Length: 451
Image (cartoon, rainbow, N blue to C red; front, side, top):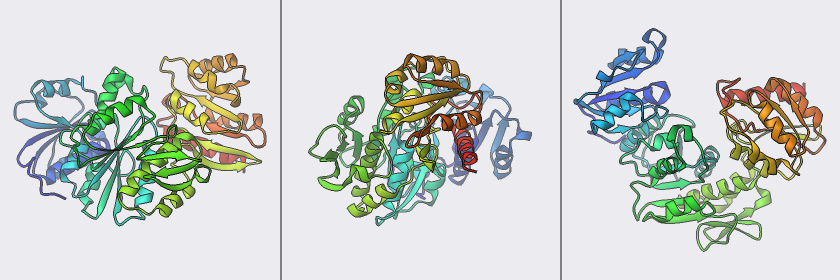
């Protein structure tokens, strides 16, 4: 860990605990800051706050008094999920007090180079692929960010022998200042988190914070086929490594004679990859470009791509039952993610979809249901809406109250050779606390079919 003096004797306010806030508060104490922690949960119910109080933090729980933000506060470290119109955040910005996320702290203390991966979809798969590939390099990768440990915890362990492979959300990137990854990876952009950001432009600008401090020595790995991503990357003075599944490029990664080509070298035939779908070819290209930068051998990259079993809840292959293959794509919390999953398969699909009703319709699914999907089983708050578009597509639809009921119905409507796919196109919060809990419920229901 670098000897950082930025926070010595500085008054710092940490807004929101959870994992990232707790980790940030502990790190700030190590860095010599005077730390105040503010969290909504009452102190008597807040184990993290109780521990931090014992460790030396001032703790204010249960409400958010504006008096916490005053002229002596040097920094505000906020939980990424807290919006910028939060009164405390707004007051800090009005006073020109820097508002950062713990990712910025991680960068300031890390002795290791950082690979920062962002995009609307594919972040976790790409991050995990990079981690697996770099295990065959001369560096020891440390996975961080939205998967694994909090970035500022990982950074405390990191040395020059490591690479921090860091998944980054738009929420986290809005709170960076000096953050400068050695390699910045931008996978794609779709309309996502607009309830938080307010507009597509604001969302793209948040993702663009990844490039904020890059220079000629930096590397950008980016999706050439996504016009907005391409325009954002090509405005930056950095080494550009594009990847494309549609065009043959002169540098970066592309497909030629169905071979995945990276920096002019063939890696493997696209059909040899263990993960289905064009989007996973994009993820593989991005990961391979990073791995080659760190001198991972081509045959080792190919080995990972042939044997990678996928990330849990992200087009995760579960098992085959009487010729039907079951895939868990619970992470598909929006319509584009479900469309991407449907595009991944050439076999007929029985689709299970449904979840939280955010007020949108599902007409975008209609072209992808036609000719691709054998039947749809819906459940949850959006059941009626998804049933409507399925009928318009001319596809049989069956409605269930709960996911546990939808799984055996999907199985009964499938045929040998079909894919049974959970890809909800909705958030999980109508019936489940998280998409992970939803995915685990699906896995359990599939296991019961085979018992």
